[in-house]
Length: 187
Image (cartoon, rainbow, N blue to C red):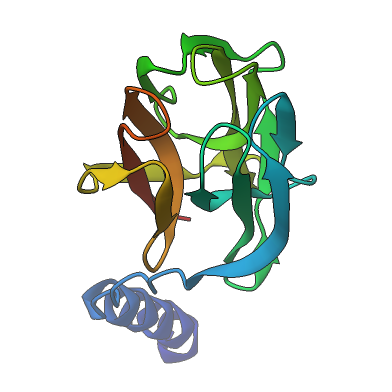
């Protein structure tokens, strides 16, 4: 009889030991934004789109509406796996360049910018949602940077930040403000 109860007693002890061991904290995901495409275009009548699976992480402009604008894209990696960017806003969101306040929908980043005409023309923004293994990647919180003069500035997101918005008021001598959001992921 002792032999039959020993395996049951061992099993009960093993189960009890498993339930008493506290679970360790979930390992935090390692998030990295690697530099991607950098392109410089003449501002007037320009259309820029980040390559597949890249989003805007910076923008700079020099001069008037015929001056150069540089777009900086980045590739997002979580635990060394590249995030997929689904470009959901294929038609873009149209704004008046000389007075606008654009922000992407929740958990989306800017993937491209088009500008038609001079400083009184339209600016169209394109955005994309981020996914890792079919699960949505969060962009939160968001923060507006300080105002800069449009005709001579450079703006770049900080560590683990992507561009989520832009405000502009006036012509090429007016003011521009950028919004950046932090990438976060709970696997």
